[in-house]
Structure formats: structure tokens, C-alpha cells
Image (tube, rainbow, N blue to C red):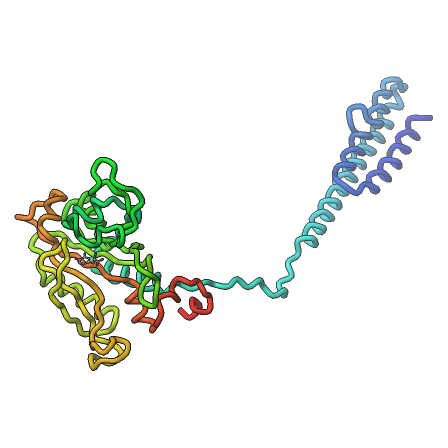
Length: 349
Ligand code: DAH
């Protein structure tokens, strides 16, 4: 076959093959088949040398035209295929914005968490830091270093959950579930120097039979201030502010003398019953007042045991039960509701 016809045939076949391709991969195979190093067009061009010199320019021109035509056709088909692929992808990934969304139910904060968060807000607003510590504690921190000696009823195994007996020193090395957040006083004083202003919320454990007002696990918030010249007046002023933040400006408090081993003097703080305004009703069991926390000036023995010079520093501390606050606040009449995980209860907050 004359070279001119060969070229025409290649052009015709190649253009048809290019048109028929349906994917980038086989388009490239077609390109290689005709234009590649060992391709058909290339093979014909290699024959050019055998042509008589006068025919070469004309055939060379035709060959160039064929190459250009195929190159253009491949580029055009490439675009067609790319567009088709993009359209297919778009169609496959179409989002129907009219389909109703999947509804995720938002949870509720537990009433105990609500109260703890609120107390954190109130106290951090007064410059306190929030400290956290272990629920599994040593008897030394839970009792001894809080000036609570052997023989105190709280130290009995009937009151407190012991995990191990003390190995070397039964009095101090015993491991237990903390029965109060007060050991955090010791842990904080060990870790930082005065001035100290902290609250420490957390779980505590006691061997109490579960009933409407008791649970073997409950929450306390410990508070402590150690600084120069701290007095009982600071304690009263701060706790009065806290009670007002919680229960409103008209809330009344009452400080009663009491005894705690780790404070001297010690007191209990009552809030006037919000339900009857002090007249006496079922909420306050006829008392007119509801006890909310224990407090006092930190005992010098406790401060000194943590290396704090009591000629320079003094401090006050308090411990309050969170459940009691939450029950008063939300009108919850049975503590068990707080721990049953019934969503019908939890959804109300
Ligand atoms: N830890 C005491 C309790 O669980 C409460 C308490 C009383 C904490 C007086 C204190 C305090 O920090 O000063 O009954």
C-alpha cells in the first residue's frame, strides 16, 4: 500500500478508536497504539527514509497532519471522558437536602452536676481554684492528719469502707474509700504554699444504708482558704455570699457552734427554709432551718502537720453535701432518684 493510503487508513482507524473509548485508561492505550514509540504512525514514519526524495515533503506534511489530528482528537476525548466522570461522581454524591435530618437527643446535666458546676462558677468568681484528688485514700489523709485520732467513730470499719489494712502502720497505711473530701485539704497544702483558695468537689463513701436521705456514695464540696490574717469573719462573709448566690439576696443563714476534729472553732451553717421562710414545714421538718454545711477555722495541728507556720498563717474550711443542696434546690424528695438513672427523672432538669 502506498504510504499516503497507509496514513489515511491509520487516521481513520485511530479516530474511530479514540471515539469509542469510554475511560481514561483505554484512551491512553489507543494513544500508545498509534502515537507511541512502537506505534503504528511511528512505524510508518520510520519508512520515510525509503521514499524518493521528491515525495518526502508531501508525505511528511500529511504525516504531521495525521499526528496533529490524532493528538487533538485524544485531547478532546480526554475532556469528554473527564467531564463524564465528574458528572457521574456528582450524580452519585448528590445530597438530598430535603430529606429530614437524623435527630440526636441532647442529654441533660444530672442535678448533682448542675449544683457542682454552679458552685464552681460561684467560687472561681471569688478567686478560688478547683482541686481534684483520689477517691481511694490513705487513712493518714482521711483521718490522722485531719486530727482525727484512733477511737473516732468515723475510723471504725462499720462506718468506713476499708480496702486494705495498714501493713507497716495500721493506723495510717490503711487504704480506704474516702469518707469526706477533707483529705483534699492536706493534699493541697502539701502541693502548694499559701495563699491558698480552693474548692474540691467529689465523691465520698460511707457505710450508710440506702434510703430516701442516705446513699453509700454521695458528693461533697470541700473549701479551704489559707492566708495571712484569715479569720472567722472571712468564713462568714464568704459563705453568706455563696448562700445568697444560690438562694437569692433574701436568703438568711445561721451559724451554730459545732465540733469537728480538724477545725477549732467549728460551726454548722443552716439556711432558712426557702419553703416556709422559717415558720416550720415538712421540707425543713418543722425546724424552719436546713443544715447545709460544716465549717470552721482550720486546727493549728492540721496546718502545722503540713508545714504551715501558724504564727504567720491561718485558714478556714468548709464541707458541704451536694445531694442535700440539689434536693432542696429542685424539690427532689427521694435521694434514690438521683442514682437510678431513670431518664424520665433526669429529663426534668
Ligand atoms: N468533712 C466534714 C463531714 O464530712 C464536713 C466538714 C466540716 C468539712 C468542717 C470541713 C469543715 O472542711 O471545716 O462531715
